[in-house]
Amino acid sequence: MHPDPNLEILMARYQQGDYDAATDLIEQTGPRLHRFFLAQSQSRQDADDLLQETWLRIHKVRHTFRAGEPALPWFYAIARHVRVDHYRKSLSTAVGQRQLEAMANEVAAVPRESDHADGLDALLAPLSASQREVIEMMKVAGMSLEEVARATSSSVGSVKQKVHRAYKKLRVTMSGAGFRTGQSGEQS
Amino acid sequence: MKDQEIDGLLKKAGRAPHDLAPEILQRVADSIKPSLHPVRPLPPTCVMTCGLVLVCAAVSLAGAARAGFFGLEKMDFLERSLIFPVLVLLAWLAGSEFAHAMIPGSLRRISSRALLGFGCAALLILFAFLFRDYHTDHFFSIGIVCLLTGFLHAIPAALLGWLVLRRGFAVNSVSAGLAAGTLGGLAGVGVLELHCPNFQAAHVLVWHVAVVPLSGAAGAFVAWMLRSWAGFGSQERITPE
Image 1 (cartoon, rainbow over the protein chains, first blue to last red):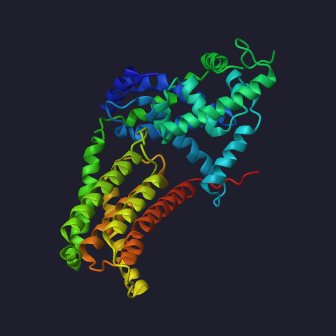
Image 2 (cartoon, rainbow over the protein chains, first blue to last red):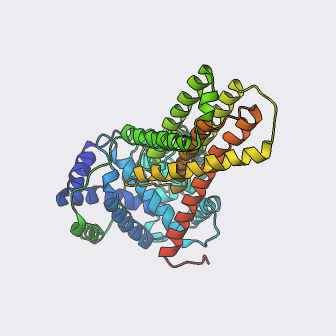
């Protein structure tokens, strides 16, 4: 997906203090970010809280968006930061980054509440948190490899590798479960 | 199962309608309304990088001016024409990565860890090529002094760099701290190259280069500490069940 010019124009107006642009941005990005949080968190309440926290952070650092840069990776980078921060604050003090990621993976592996166990959740369930994150950004948010790299502060090569591994895992899982096109989330 | 089929499944699942209560979006809009005023966007990355390189150069020159330019005076033309351009180049690279680390959604061409590794490797190769005196006199006693001198100059360089980028926002503060420390370390090496007249290969290769990883590690540690304090100070600690 190419950078969304509409989002970038709205961002520029938002930086100038335009309330209508801000509400348009909230309406356009809100559901995407909410879905992003829902794919990573355990409950809808968590996702709702994270979305509001993210927007407060976005508002606070809106000056860091620069014209000419794609807006979507900027939103996702902040959303990702808020999510990691949220987990970090929820965990005990002596947990290092590596342990933290492992715990996030464990959290991701816990069966979801039925209220948001939609087709996408079922499809992405076998993936680790970081793989789910990049697949969600690419296939649901429609971001390009470079945009995902920007959002995750990593290199394009690293994103490619994660996608490759995720697809490998999905191929095995879906073949085993008998998924077919047109029957997402269901077993044939 | 083919990749195209997986693509199709994911896209179809992703297109499924997502219900999000409109009240939540309205609440967000209401919460930002009172503080919605025009803001000045950050300057281009090259401007911020320029500022950081100038800070590095200023700290190096000020440090050497205070201690004396004995190293510069002892250097021959080849040493001068290789060491300082390489230091400026590395400072530019570190400054650019530090600036990118302070802008959300910025494309990182090299990670902060790779930057630190690359900086150290480049300095080691350069110094190994230029300095061929393999004698070692007072290796530890003189070396520690150089290491401390470099590190003590790295601290103000990193802090001033942080001041230059104070309006930025680090989505990964440890990575940003590592980049800031690396940049400061390069300023510290600059001071040592201008000031230290000890051109023994072992001394330069070990103690001068060591300023960069030491400063980088210190920067990452400080950022980690600040993040931990900010995180645990502001919220109740939740014990996992």
